[in-house]
Image (cartoon, rainbow, N blue to C red; front, side, top):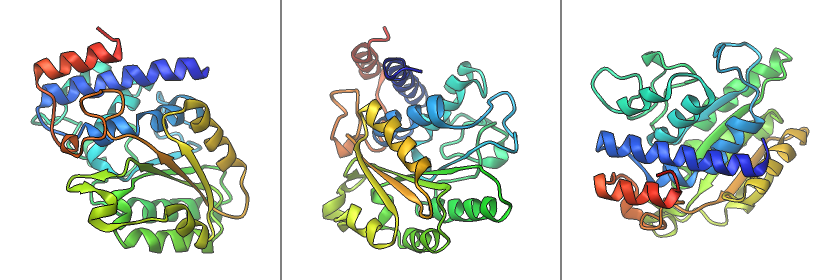
Amino acid sequence: MTVQELEKKAKIVRADIIRMLAEAKSGHPGGSLSATDLMVGLYFEKLKHNPKNPEWKDRDRVIFSKGHACPLLYACLAETGYFPTDELMTLRKLGTRLQGHPGKNKGLPGIEISTGSLGQGLSAGVGMALGFKLDKKSNRVYVLMGDGELQEGSNWEGVMSAAHYKLDNLCGIVDSNKLQIDGAVKDVMNIAPLPDKWLAFGWNVIEIDGHNMSEVIAAYDKASLTKEKPSVIIANTVKGKGVSFMENQAGWHGKTPNKEQAAMALKELGVI
């Protein structure tokens, strides 16, 4: 896809997120919208996968560590053809495959691992990437993390291990929107200087504007060409990106739009 086509797709995914959350009346819009461009660039351009054959052995793996933002994951999976988009409207309903956090055991195609307990995704990614290395496979592993999630100490064991084993098939993606449910990340538990910390652990660090699709695609390309060390893309993003009344508002971390607010959001996105 061209950059323009990817940007158009990102608007469609953001609209899916708004519709899902308005219907469910429960969920997390802020972090879903902030990471949308990152996941659209990955799923629609970079990722080696086959939605018609979700268990294809040569596929790349995506670990959605910030599991509470799963409306974004579900929208990407539906829009790439893993399941019908109509099913998105079942989010968080009784018996649905679209749980409030991704559940591997629910049978939704495209879910590689259950996530939601923050701070565990990277270590799982390290294990997968190391396994592919040992088996001499070319599969790549991508792990999406939130910046607030990096306050969990287990992440740093994964960071250390990935560099030790020179896992150049592993790419971490940090959705750095700088807000979490209780306020600014720097006030709750400061994680700065983030690039320096990853560099000190031996990673290839790529810092970008996470809403510039050209930079997003270039970052994935650069990561895949890096040898002998894992890469991390630190993406500076805006919480609630794309919906003006949600942008940079910590209060929209886990609050859903009502019918009128959803209509306003969809109008802003240009889809109604």
